[in-house]
Amino acid sequence: MSKPSCDLNGPHPTSGPVVAADPNELPGAPPPSPNGRILYENLGIRIDKDCVWHYHGSPIRRKELVCMFAHALTRDGDGRHWLVTPAEVGPIEVEDSAFLAVEMFVGGRDETQTISFRTDVDEIVTVDADHPLRAVRDPLTGETVPYVTMRHRLEARVIRPVYYELAALGFEDEMDGSRCVVVWSSGLRFSLGVLEEVV
Image 1 (spheres, rainbow, N blue to C red):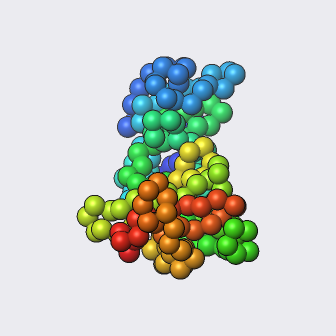
Image 2 (image 1 turned 90 degrees about the vertical axis):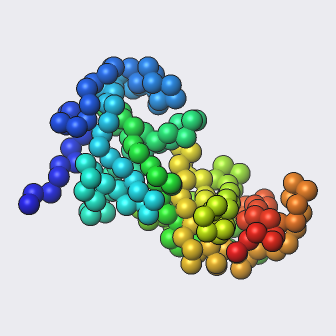
């Protein structure tokens, strides 16, 4: 069985019609390049909750392809994900986050500490004012789930083993009127959640 093509140079049977040459016709879409982009309603690409990329229902196994697509990925102010090339733009379905933070690096300590993560596409992001950490409580499991902001509003979900390493750096402090588990990075404090909820 032949592998599905990941060529974005033309429409595909399930891509949907070309609806506009100007992606600004979709609210929140990335701005067009100077020579304009073809806008697709559906590129057939989905990132599932485990951050596995799928093309027309089939997992993309080649990391080189995933990295290529990842480089072209962006997220608008409404939280929608778009794949943007010099010639085309189209929405991408993302079930949770687009990436995973799979490894953590720590330098310094206390207020001078810096925390960096390596993602599943081998990008390095350092937690700072432009790349903050946020933590949410999973309503189904009750677990704390941290995310780190990357470029273009994209996020990487911190996998559980790395979260435990991150939580080990935390200390109790007050933020926004609550007692929280807090970590330092780049001279800033970031909350991992309310103390009694951090698990």
